[in-house]
Length: 156
Image 1 (tube, rainbow, N blue to C red):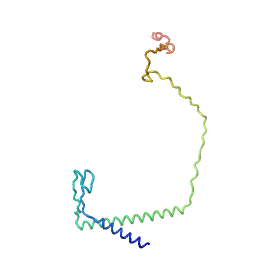
Image 2 (image 1 turned 90 degrees about the vertical axis):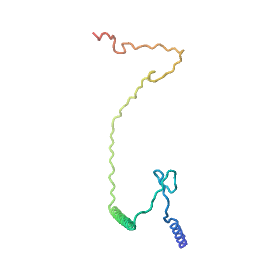
Image 3 (image 1 turned 90 degrees about the horizontal axis):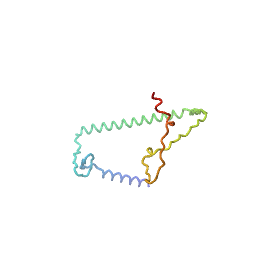
Image 4 (image 1 turned 60 degrees about the vertical axis):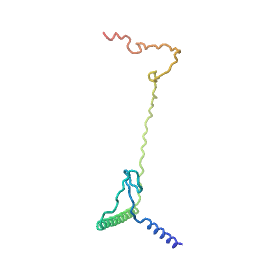
């Protein structure tokens, strides 16, 4: 059963490698995007590799060196993390002391609710009135309530 799975996997891998061989395709630039199919106003781009064999070999060596350096850095990181985990496991666990809660008791303060004044017609905005309805005449505030009994007394 296991050999049958391996043979099927090998066939699938070979078929996918065969179907994805690099072939020259046309690339079109359509505005700010690129596409394999032509578009209205698109321009055909020349994407041939113009490097000579020596330049390609140099780039391949640099890529291989970078990949090896990345593997070394990952190995070092994993080693350091393993050492830190081992050091943490050896260190005894000491829970932090519980925070002390301080209770402050104050005398309650009574808060008086705001008293809202009745809004006048100007504050309410437009008020519709029936024309036939009669309103009682509005009394003007007396001078005593305004705090000035006689306005001419203070002007001597």
